[in-house]
Image (cartoon, rainbow, N blue to C red; front, top):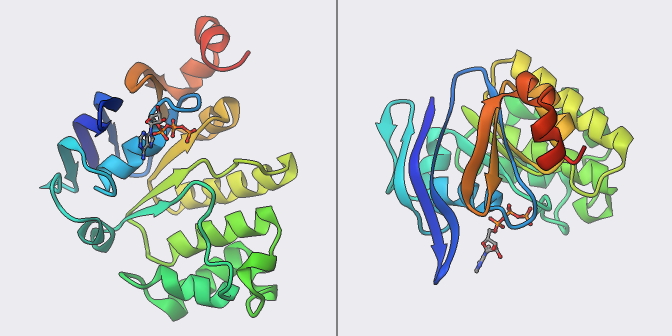
Length: 230
Ligand code: ATP
């Protein structure tokens, strides 16, 4: 459903992503792992043309390489960004409405999101800035789901959260997978994300250093030592 070929992102002379290729198939969770500065966020931004990129991006058979970010979102490639980027001074409900700015049906999708995250329903009239970190992450994920993603891109959803909240977020990701929403998941949390994903790519200095089936990568002692923090 998503094919990325030779994607390149440069910031002036900084080569953040160096001609990487990868794919996400229908129904899959694909993880992109890598340490700080490996090029994970730039990869997502490059796909969506939030930053200037070179290379080929094919989505559902269509070459969308040079299309605008708005076009991509309207097509159904939806990003839940790193650090949540919620609108703090708006209420939970208003944040969710913002999610449907370019696509998605508010009344249908808000029911779905509130069922997934009952705490958001309880706090729907509350200012988003007053939520806990975990609730804000749920809101960011909920806002992305409001756009009825055909492909959901998640940038470090576990960043800075307590283990119990991370478990909650990951259990929702499992539910999304069961509802056949493909996910491109960017993480530093290697073990957790490999456990949930089908395949993974490890980025190192803007290159794909390793790729494979997540389960096999989890059991690869050499990889564990060099990349997975074990
Ligand atoms: P993190 O986990 O810290 O978000 P990352 O793997 O997502 O890291 P990127 O944010 O994509 O990595 O950064 C890749 C490289 O590009 C790094 O060397 C970073 O310093 C550089 N970089 C990122 N954004 C910019 C920018 N706007 N201008 C210049 N260099 C940038």
